[in-house]
Length: 269
Image (cartoon, rainbow, N blue to C red; front, side):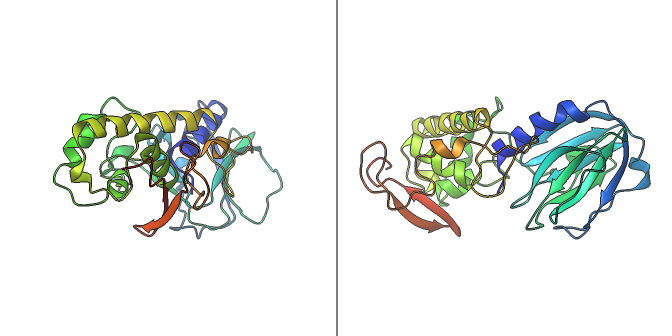
């Protein structure tokens, strides 16, 4: 599913096209996404003040609230011209200045669009989220503090959005490999030094993925319809049974928290 780098890539791609424009309408071809899409008449005529990412959500801020978009498992958001022909999975067009539209394409319909009239940070999807992994708040000290005394596997701790947001399955696998930490290690067993290494690895992996436009495994495309290329740099994710690029040993795949997890038994301890 689109994770932080894919949403950040989307945000950077669409923001210049819609910031400062008025919302003049919308086309709802399919309301039945993860939650029913409801856009009130009061949204029409409002000007976009800013477009930004929070966790895996894209937030379009207007004077009287926000439109909050989640790409779900297979969604993408692209800039198209008003009246552009729509495909089977092109469910929602949010129109601006009667000129262009943001089109949500979502084959599996796990995405969502919400209008929130108040402070975006108080929306029920966003209010309990943890820190951003690329912010100054996220470092080894923060991770060590939240890992202390915890028996949960470190990979699951890393993917807990109440602690740190946006580190999905792909990037948790890759960050743990870079830090040399096995995914199943109990979080509470990590030393401060290992937490420092892991926090740094998370930042480096996410930064590199954003620079490459995210990872396209199946459906993701950016705001211009192009795939992400970080998939070519993956060291462990999706490579169960293949040789480790670092030691030439065999990578091992397991299920952890119902998610595919791949690691190197030699390089990760």
